[in-house]
Image 1 (tube, rainbow, N blue to C red):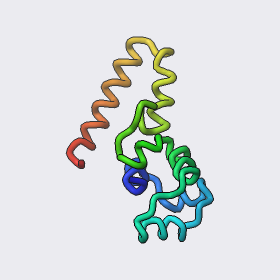
Image 2 (tube, rainbow, N blue to C red):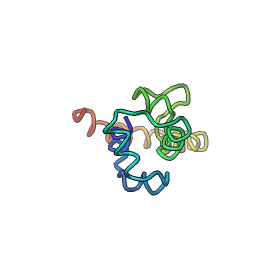
Image 3 (cartoon, one colour):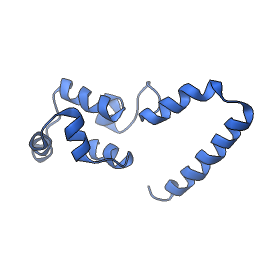
Image 4 (spheres, one colour):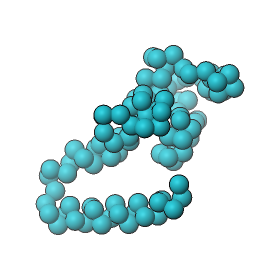
Length: 104
């Protein structure tokens, strides 16, 4: 699930290694042995990626809402937008989403 989230956010594992300070070898070891990281490590990875731990474990985001930090930040500014801005944002989001719907 971590790889899926890294790919979805269009970032890299190199970035994740730097942000978490968890060595590349540790990630490789988890993958090769089919091991789930300790809770504190999983929480750190989730926080850096801006997702819930549930999302990393299951691929489904939990009650915290949107699975990515940018979406939460957008949601925080929505109350400050007027009707025209909201319609523009909605049209833009729909156009962008349509590019990805066929790629799943």
